[in-house]
Length: 400
Ligand SMILES: Cc1cc2nc3c(=O)[nH]c(=O)nc-3n(C[C@H](O)[C@H](O)[C@H](O)COP(=O)(O)OP(=O)(O)OC[C@H]3O[C@@H](n4cnc5c(N)ncnc54)[C@H](O)[C@@H]3O)c2cc1C
Image (cartoon, rainbow, N blue to C red; front, side):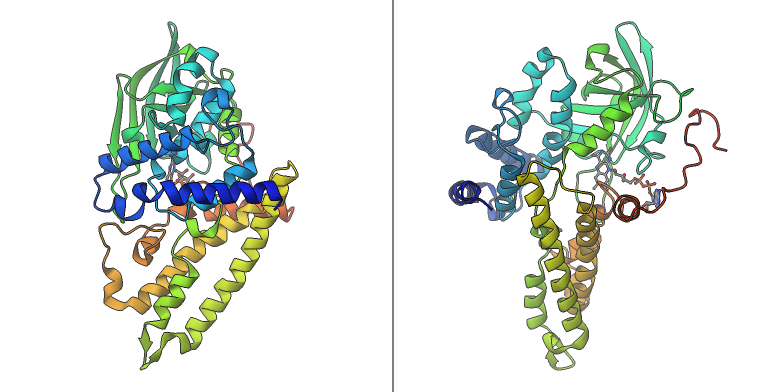
């Protein structure tokens, strides 16, 4: 890491130490979602005032005009605090940058700055009941009408739709074309008539996910992003924008150190769990894996420093961190015994073993484990592509 970046990290660390505590940790305990969201909006605005919000976006839209590496460094430091960031993570990382890339200057002028400051929140309406990993098989339809389009259908797993002001959405505009070719991309006001948001209850109590229903919702044509039937390209661009999302392993779940501490305070057959062969092997395995993942992380940072994008091997990190979070938490729950079943009101998958074990979302969102394995097989190992029977077929005919 060069001196300028070291200095940037040091400044960020000092700024966070001075400013983050009133917005994080104990300050958030027992808050309602509304109160926590208000705290999050205040934190986002404070960051915007000090050049730490949307670090890579241009200053003209409220960003900091910084580098990808600065963004990673700031996120690493910010993750040491338990801040109310979740409400903004999708909004700022995917919909906002793609909106800036395709929207008219008038719309940019109206929506960009308030989004950067957390006053407006966006959701991403891609997944449907029959279209997740295979996004191109989505069915929500958009039919042309005077001045725009009418949208009907359903989306699912939409994070934070219940608090979102705006959303980006992909719809099928021509079912006679092959599935990737008949899609169009729009942004829309989530308060439009005909939009209804229904919450999905999660096992661990998180309140982020929703189903969203569209009943003949009008979207003006100037809210189309990209070409008619060119929406799949824009969708892929949206997913590629966040090139290196999670910055270090502490963001994924309870740390190995926390597990060692737990083992040190637990007895198995009258002896410290740290003397148990299976526990020692678990710790050793995860330690070795962590060193490997840190090497991959350093390589990604080097790629950014050299002006390149990290390669597909980033999929290895997501795959292993997601799997290990659950397997380590499962072993921790075995050590905790009956007390492991207690889920505190402020338990969070980042720091609590029970809620980390109950929450498989890291292994689904942003690419399931199996899809990551496909990526590694095809793009890292060069194995043949997955079998795609519907390739080139019109969407409305059955595959051969
Ligand atoms: C916490 C969370 C937040 C989310 N937020 C959003 C959001 O804001 N907006 C949004 O649009 N979506 C969101 N999603 C949805 C997410 O993108 C999808 O869940 C994901 O793409 C998987 O799709 P699916 O659930 O339809 O599963 P499917 O794609 O149906 O997969 C089911 C199973 O089949 C396997 N599988 C599928 N295809 C293959 C293949 N080719 N080879 C091998 N195995 C395969 C999968 O790995 C999985 O095990 C979120 C999901 C979660 C968990």
